[in-house]
Structure formats: C-alpha cells, structure tokens
Length: 221
Ligand SMILES: C[S@@+](CC[C@H](N)C(=O)[O-])C[C@H]1O[C@@H](n2cnc3c(N)ncnc32)[C@H](O)[C@@H]1O
Image 1 (tube, rainbow, N blue to C red):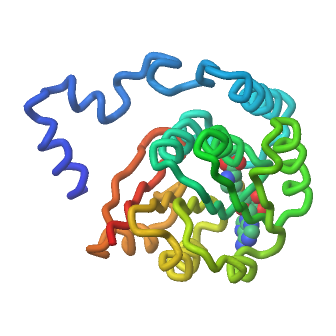
Image 2: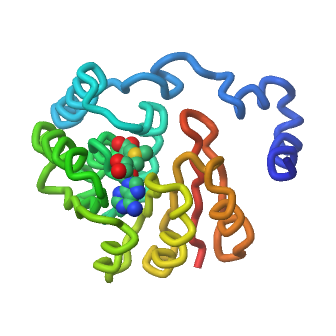
C-alpha cells in the first residue's frame, strides 16, 4: 500500500532494525506494551484489577485487547483530554482504560451503548474501579442518542457498528475540537471511513497496527 511503503522508505536508513520496530518487532512483554502495565498508584491498581477480573471471569464482549487499551490511555493522557466520547461501551473495558487517564487529567467519559445487559455490566465495572463519577453511559441506538452531544470534546473513539462509522464521523467531526483526536478501532473493517480520514486536508492520520488495529486522526483545524 502506498502510505505504508512511504513510511518504510523513511525508515530505510535504519535498515531491518527500524522496519521491524514499525511492525512490532521490539515486543518484549510489558516493556513494549503487551499485557497489563505495572501500576504506579492505588487508583491504577484498582482499575487494573477490575480489568483482570473481567477477562478472567468472562465479563467481556468484543473488548479492546490490553495493547489497544494501553494506547487509548496513553493518547488520552498525553492529549490532556477533558472529555472523551466513545461509541460502543460493551462491558466498559476500553472505558476503564480511558478512565485511567481521565482521573489524571480531571476529565470525563461519555459512552454510548444499545445493549442494556452490557451497559449494566459496564456500570458495575466502573463502580468497582471507583471511576463511576467520571462516566456517563448513554443507552439506546447511538445514531439517535449522539444528537444529545452539543459541546466540543477532545477525543472521539469509534468502536461500535463498523458501517456506522461514516455517520458518526459526519455528525461528530464538527464537535471534535481543533487539535483533538478521532480514533477508530478495527479500522480495516471500515474502508469508507478510512477514505474520509485520509482525503480531508484538515486531518492527519496514522495507524496503530497492533491488537485490533486503530486509526489515529488529528483534527488539525
Ligand atoms: C466492539 S464492542 C465495544 C467494545 C468496547 N469499546 C471495549 O473495548 O470495551 C461494540 C459495542 O457497540 C455496541 N453497538 C453496536 N451498534 C451500536 C449502536 N448503533 N448504538 C449503540 N451501541 C452500539 C454493541 O452492542 C457492542 O457492545
């Protein structure tokens, strides 16, 4: 693919070492982002133990793997995000990763889910991790309920119906603040969305190829 070979071209001077890094060749367990990270505070420890328990007990449904979750946390904290909007809560595991950052940034999460049982499980996870006050779960079809969003926010994370990404993009891009991020999980399953984020000069997109694959788009203007 064109964009991939351009990137490899830039890394050519680094030889095979640099290109292996791009493909994930530096993986070395925790150090390179796999598994759960080491906890630095009691708050982090509490969130990580809820994540671990959810995976061990099967309180899961199509959740982001740890690698992707760690990247969500990292981006959110680095962006000093105050408000993250997530489409597709499931049982709240990506939400927990966002909360790990948001409790540091003083931010909050609004997350949309149409399955009441998964929303209830997510609520339990947020309570157990002591982050419930940071999270608003909006139940119902997000194509209807996102109409409630009126104020600009910092990060949009798309992780629900893949053929809905274009509708979410068209309606929510105006609310992402300039300098904010649009993140789309399983990007390989949303080619039309991918076209939109790579043909708009006001956007800059790169790809996180680990885990489920994710586009990372900066709203420049
Ligand atoms: C891939 S899972 C989300 C995983 C979650 N982000 C995580 O990593 O923990 C997708 C979720 O989106 C929900 N969903 C799909 N279409 C939706 C819609 N139109 N409105 C609201 N939720 C929807 C599904 O019920 C499912 O729970």
